[in-house]
Length: 203
Image (cartoon, rainbow, N blue to C red):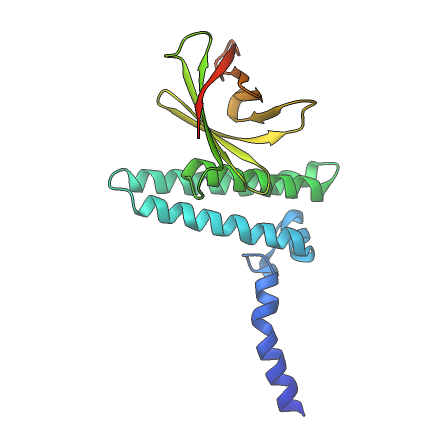
């Protein structure tokens, strides 16, 4: 009887491990990590982001040039993100803050490293100038995300609540608010300029 009980525990162990987060809960150091270890859905989000991070590193490993610098940058960004997640103890709602942090991070990783096929690609001519083009790639991450390309710059953003259309916010004030074939694009420059944009093609 004892042997059967032990065998059942051993068989169940991988399932228990799979339901937990990607880190060792016995070494949880922050209130965020402690909560994640107690919350099945947050643990799932942790595994999801850990998988996206590993996938991004795999993409970097396949680069012909610049792999080492990109790897160092990604690792530094991930450490910074973890530090920011752990700052959620300051928030009024710890769980909501932690969940939002994971959802945004998944969107960032997928859009930045194009880990999935985009659900749509849109080309926008902004400010009445076809040369002033913004390209957006949309991704069906758990929190819908976008990849911005304008000239040589690349940024990512996530969907935010709005009364009409779809608004995505990126870094340093960058955003795009789409309404059918029209959009308002905001650039992250010191003046915070906004342009009216017209859809020229999509896919």
